[in-house]
Amino acid sequence: MNCEDFENNINDLTREQMMDGVVREQALVHRDNCPACAQRLAAESALSFKLRALAVVARSAAVPPLGNEVLAALREHQAPMSRLATRSRFRARAVTAAATAAAAALVLVVLALGLLRSGSPTPTAQNPNLPVEKGSGESPKSVAGQPPISPNKNLAPGRLTGINIKRGLPRGAALAKAAAGPNRKDLVVTETRTSVTGSYAVEITTDFFPVGYGSAPSLGDGGQLVRVEMPRSALVAFGLPMNVNRYDEKVKADVLFGADGMAHAIRFVQ
Amino acid sequence: MMAGDEAALTTLFRRRAGDVYRFALQMCGSRALADDVTQEVFIVLIREGHTFDAARGSVSAFLIGIARNHVLRRLRRERFYVSMEEGSERQNNAGEPGSAAAGPLDDLARRETIESVRRSVLALPERYREVVVLCDLEEVSYLEAAEILGCAVGTVRSRLHRARALLIEKLRAAEETEAVEVKSARCFA
Image 1 (spheres, chains in turn cyan, brown):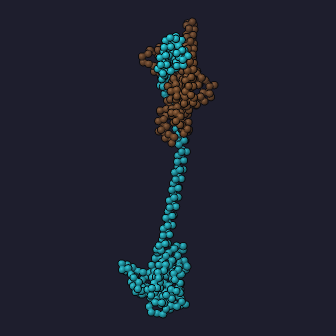
Image 2 (cartoon, helix red, strand yellow):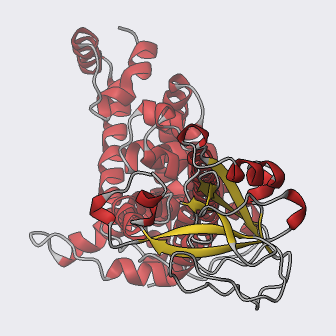
Image 3 (cartoon, chains in turn brown, green):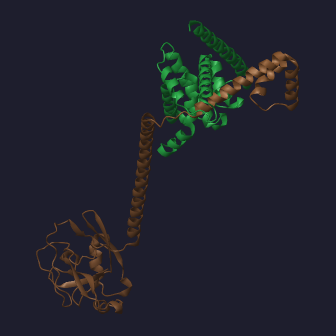
């Protein structure tokens, strides 16, 4: 090893760095043979010693505490992040609420469609005080000993409209059928609908059965259709089956009064 | 910590602030400036911590790299001003505990030597000073020093070699000056 090579490795030698063992041996041999390089190595070693002493003193220096500026910067940095998190949380909640509302609306629509398809009666259809189709001012008469059911005069005409005759068989045909006698073959269950200011009600009615042995009502006689409630046993009187478990319940019926004030026909409503 | 956890910041500060502060103090020689730089480094870490890439180096190297930039900027800005802390630095150093075995004269000589080395390091050009501070005072490896300084390992080695040679010259010159001053003092006595 010459002086130049020694100079190249003097730092690693004095700073006790990892170096090749052979190179280290050669450098130490060169130091022993070259007084200038030995002096150079001594100066470097002295410098390393002094620097180490300075490092020790520096390490004992007190480190300043965490400043308020840093904490303020942290909170300043934290605020926009929390705002972003709040915004994203709000957006997620809004999306969830919108999805829930949409699902609820869908369920309501499906339920409404199901109700329409099944034709189940609505509370409006079960209202016993259905109005007279034609308001004539005459008091309704009872059928089979039942008290007459007065129409609800508080309702405006046309506001609550029984359209069973319109939706079911035509009125003339119904009257003609009623006049034809109690024929079981002619028993037709008709679906009628009652609308109450936009609401939609469905009624299921039988066909008209003639009452008594009177003359058949003619089409030009006019008349009234009165909703009444009758004992369920009245179904048997007209040849209809009756559920014995519900014998104590009333059954709704529409009684067709002729111009002479006599009941000419009746139909049952579910 | 990037999520704003104050406890995490405090923990990181406790672990790494010493390295940053010592580096800044050795580079600029001013406690106040080193304190400012340390706080600034952590403020930068909070704001731009997302730029840290673990593949490019350790957290310590990242922090010291920020500290280096701040120190150099502050030194260039304030090089026209004279520090008034020199006297207080000496007073502070005088208060540091010496070795118990050494006598008062040895302790005084040791402190003078350390102060002389400190001044010599501070008198080095910046590019040599930083490698001495990193490799000799902070005992950072060549590789990590290269990451901090953004240069090759060979560059670090060559700069360190040159810096140490400069330091030896400066210390020798300082010793000769002190010897002359002592001789002249004897003449006047």
